[in-house]
Image 1 (cartoon, rainbow, N blue to C red):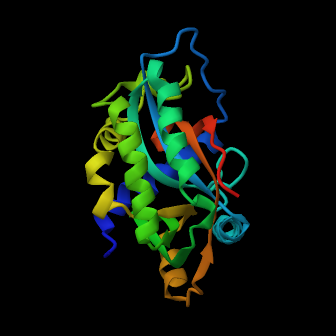
Image 2 (cartoon, rainbow, N blue to C red):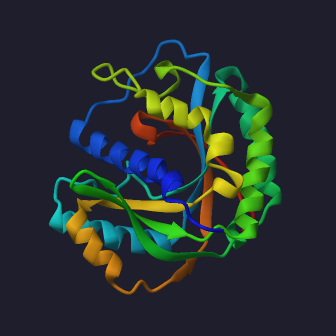
Amino acid sequence: MKLNTKNLTHFLLIGAMACAVALAGGNALAADAKPNPITAIDILLEPDATMIEHATATNERLRKVFPKGFALDASHRPHITLVQRFVLTENLDKVYAAVGKVFASANVTGLKLEAFKYYYIPDKDLGVSGIVIKPTPELLTLEKQVIDAVTPFAVKTGTSAAFVTTPEDPNIIPPLIAYVSEFVPKHSGENYHPHVTTGLAPREYLDKMLKEPFEAFTFSPTGAAVYHLGHFGTAAKKLKQFDLKP
């Protein structure tokens, strides 16, 4: 499968901008007295120590040249998105049950994934960097099974109220709402390009970094979860952690 720059652009920019905004703003998450009828969710995989080590090392390297960038910390954990969807809030437990069956029957922790290069998306003078993962047949099968499981509970779109926001910044940018609405099919299946976002840095520096030899490495997922999406597509709040086969 050939990686497509256009398809990866939204993925990397959304994840990195989310971390940068959260780090700079430091605002507490808004607590709604009454849940919104629609919730924007991210069903994702949590990588093992090998990927976290590589992503963290890259992040620390980038922050030395661009201190205003974001750190990969407890609030901005490296992850691999499988699918993002809008669902009816009242059906969240049904989503957990359906997706949980997929994860319970799949050998998620047995997946052997290969990270094979750095990548960045230009944003004026800066670039959003990430580690790109080869989409194996097994990973694509899992992604399809998760999509099939959540589809009966998905709705076409939502509003800012479907996301985690703050009183100071209650509005979600329209491109993110469109991105989640169109994730299936525009960013799934043959258009699915898994990656782990690693940070922000000047494009001049990233150009040099991309010319360096990249030593490919393998890793496996250790967890799977559903997160409530926040500003710019961040995995803002964990809603459900799944039990996986050992």
